[in-house]
Length: 306
Ligand code: SF4
Image 1 (cartoon, rainbow, N blue to C red):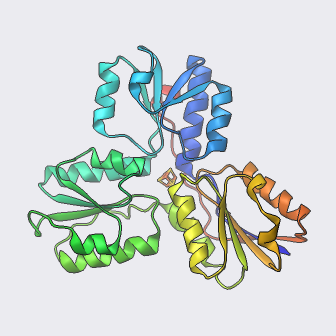
Image 2: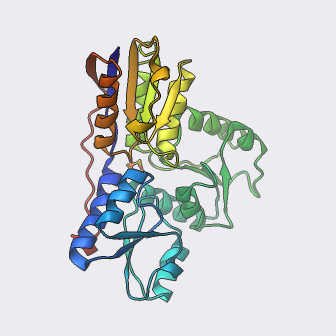
Image 3: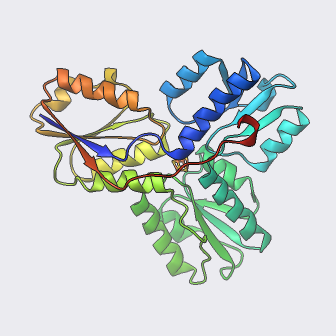
């Protein structure tokens, strides 16, 4: 059995920045540091940071007055910043700059009187944050069927934005419907689906027809990991999303000659290495890294922890 390892995979620049923000805050301000929501959607990362002294909460009311609280890479609505102020918390914003860009676009379109159609999943925390920029003007559309149905007050003033971690192909199908229905649809200056999501999906697509089974290493909460698994499954082969090597089931690999591996943008490389080691124990004899688009993106840290 051969293992084909996609590159790029794993941590993106936004995730690296968010994790480093928590680690630096712990060093600078001491334990504990509070984090609103999982800093990134990966339980391995979250448990590691918990051991280092981070406390994860879902509501700012759980944070003692005067404490430092970090906002996760997924971003928060403006109301959350205001609430932190009311509660006298020291907020540190670890929102990925590429998510912040979508917030800025939402504010810009809302100020110009547009209805914003946000392509994404309504229950995802990133989408909740963007909607919070202009709740009265934003409608979430997830599928082409949603795009066919959505009603807006003025079809001449409609703008579209997208969640950063969608399937590029699915988002394009939704976008095509919206462009047909709203010929004057305003689009962001630059693509919202981020480089990391796009590159990881392209790397998987490049192996179409070459693998008998896909393993995507990532958390079930991770949007981009789920999209990678769906992309593998769309190729007509089994595709499993696993968080750790312990979840591998030997019967998955019966008769498989080539196993493709990738990992979501919030997955540490240690999780991938553990899966590869387990596959070696299950009979993998060859390992090949398949190069995709090189990534050089880096983001500077929030000023509070520089
Ligand atoms: S997946 Fe994209 S948007 Fe999300 S943290 Fe990474 S670079 Fe930023």
